[in-house]
Amino acid sequence: MKVLVSGASVAGPSVALWLGRAGHDVTVVEIAPALRQGGYAVDFRGEVNKEVLRKMGVLDDLRALQTGGTAMRFVDESGQQLMRLPIEFAGGELEVLRADLSRVLYEHSRDTAAYRFGDSIASLREHAGGVDVRFESGLEETYDLVIGADGMHSVVRRLAWPAERVTERHLGYYVAGWEVPNTLGITGDSLNYNVPGKLASVGEDRRNPELAQTLFVFKSPQLSYDRRDLDEQKAIVREHFAEVGWHVPTLLDGLPTATELYFDSISRVHVDRWSQGRLVLLGDAGYGATFGALGTGTAVVGAYVLAGELARAGNDHRIAFEQYEARLRKAVSATQDGSRSGQFLAPSTRFGITARNRMLDTRFFLNQMLKMAQKMSNLIELPDYDSAEQRELAQE
Image (cartoon, rainbow, N blue to C red; front, side, top):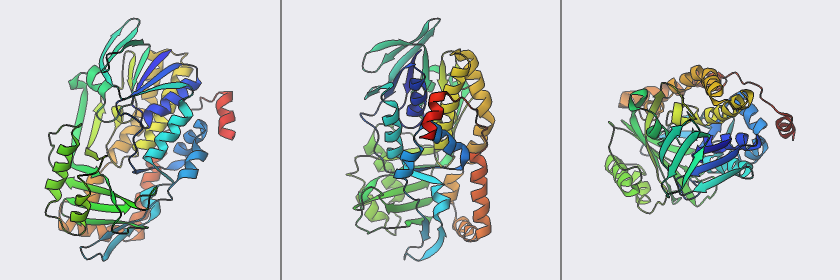
């Protein structure tokens, strides 16, 4: 089949890898001009995640690139430690930089899938023979299937799913991050500072010790802004942290020259059905929660199940899409419900900040949270779609 995948972050290259190996004619389109280089770390937890990575043939590559995780030290304005979350809490069992993960997935899939950067889908028209796609570049093509693996703000979902079938719930917080010169000499633990409703964090850049990575979280009603206007997003961050002390003024000084900024609401999306005719949603596009909901591992597992069900159904997309959703819907809903990262990182009151610090400063509560994350990561029962070729790759 001729398949179009929208999005080249994690879910897109993952499903392209599987479909390309199965012999399909796969194209991945990505609006960014190249693979994104942001330095944030993502993690995988549990045997289900690791087994899929092993089947993909990428587990050893990722282990060679793992960061080892970073402990989170929460401090007051003078730098005195209030509470520390150990490496295993923040970094999972296998933590890598998102940019490294995307690159590895791209390298393993590019021989059997074509990548088209700097373009996006402008319109979709489904008919009996396929899906007519017009791209922003003006190119027009017809595909047998279109997979929306393009994140929380999915173009495929926006173009093809009626608004009444999609619920996007703002969870009350925004998150931002950018690179700054490491003038503070940050090494080891990331440093985290709270005031009510806000978190400012800085940690060393694992690729370049001369740089540091920031993470800012703030409580806010839903905002209206242009997602492609970095200057407008930078102004929003400055406005919300203008009166915050600690190292925040220094970190904000690095914002105007930042060439990459991650800025988004912490939100959750619910779609009544993940497929519609020859179109299907994968990862955050169909069942995402922006931050802290095991989304990376879920996207990789989802790609494996989607491609596997297509193969099992003899490429009958109607059967395959039904089975894909039936296998994942319940488990994915549970991981989405676990996304309370904004409230956790930036409690809205001083009492809330103190209560969080005291609770997690005891090993009992920390262990309970680790067990919960482990349990959620293993909720999906992994089918065995292995071909002889896939078993050989997994053994290498």
